Image (cartoon, rainbow, N blue to C red; front, side, top):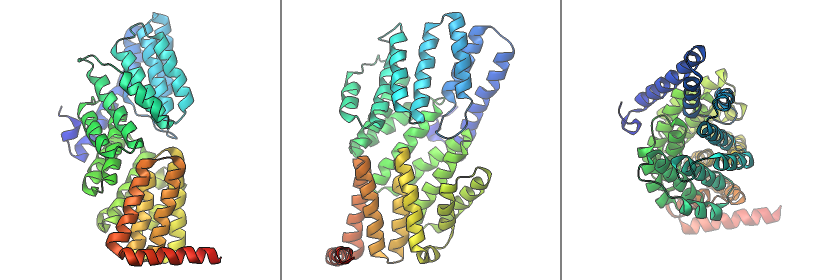
Length: 389
């Protein structure tokens, strides 16, 4: 089978669905017959391959519970450690970060081979949790302390992913590009969850570098894997993010097709917080502009929601989407206000990478679309009007 990175979006979707389908079929077969060790191995492979997302149902918790009972029955210390590690990653994916750290500590304490690949994976996962907690100094020190054996291919790919995630949060976006590219090239096919994460993170990097064609490519890659996994809530979000970026590029046909798919999925899997944005996106830019106040309010509500979830791509895409519509309609004060609000959210969340994106769009509004003098006069008028209220 070819590496996923070389496939089209359709191929990626089929490959993801096929791999997960095989894992899902293996579980009932192993439960029906075979020794306990075979059932344990099957459950662990399925639990590690099946992606987990906050707010979306998953069989992974039940599989891990059953695997834990079998590991105890077999007195398999290695399996116990792997189960604790996977539970920790599941907690991290659900943003239950303190619980994730506690489980990682349990896994490290239970590991009989402290210098092996399993111990390295525990240490790498700890870095990823620390990054999500914005404990960047601790994350950096923990990254530097990780030592990997040359044959630890999976751990090496995961370390590059952790490094890229750290560099994004530390606003080292150019460096993150190299780390995440290496991670995506090396991650095994069965680590679908991490391949999705790497693709989404690379998309954010290219948004930050104002390279929208590459950003779109990696978002499409993530979306294809999510579709293959049947995680429809995340597919809807990817559709909205992709369509928002296409709208900013005036590629309205592609954007409307994605908004239409998102609307259809929303009917099957209701997502009220996205419904208004989908309706907005499907409307013509001129019609959306006539609803400027409602549009801004809806986008900023979604942006704040994405910020609370820790979703950088969602935050940036919503704000850039709205500012793009406003700019196209020559509503420059509104576009500036939207970008400034996004900047304030990013500052509050202490996301320097997101701050950098919004600053770049403000600079573009000033230098390329309005001109420095007109921009400064506009901002001065806005400040004066605020003081007069």
